[in-house]
Image (cartoon, rainbow over all chains, first blue to last red; front, side, top):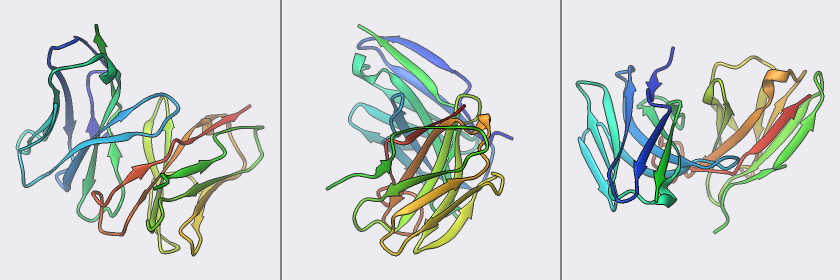
Length: 113
Length: 115
């Protein structure tokens, strides 16, 4: 039972355009969401997070949107750069889960020059 | 400030053997969590230790175990290795027990191959 899903395994975008990565979750107890960027054979690197009390959080080129009623979040990268090419994971944490994250399956983003 | 250090980086073991992986958290961090990444199952939570106590455990068989020492360093052990245990094992450390957001940082992982 996948509680966090990323339905697009891959996404290809032209440099300078917007990249939109999507994530859905089923567990209503999740109250904190994160996006990570990952390269092969390396650990995930934190990008941006959002608490369930907000619907938007922005950090430079990265913006995360949360739609609690739809149990959906998205990561927008504007403008996309070739260095953004990597696998992106969304992850969720619940109030009583301590330091435990539930990850989606990842989306491979390719930004073409 | 040193990051999360995992040793060894790569490991090859034979089916039936056991293996121990090590994770040294960022200085001052007291919580260490372990994850397994495989192509089929993605990133899955194994367990979390805080102040030498296991706080959370994922859905893995008893062959997977761990411990944390008084200096917050953690080890995980897998006994009776199976081919399906081949994976990238990641640990993450954080400052306290207050949940995600307290500087939750991942190491580079240990790539375990079981032959």
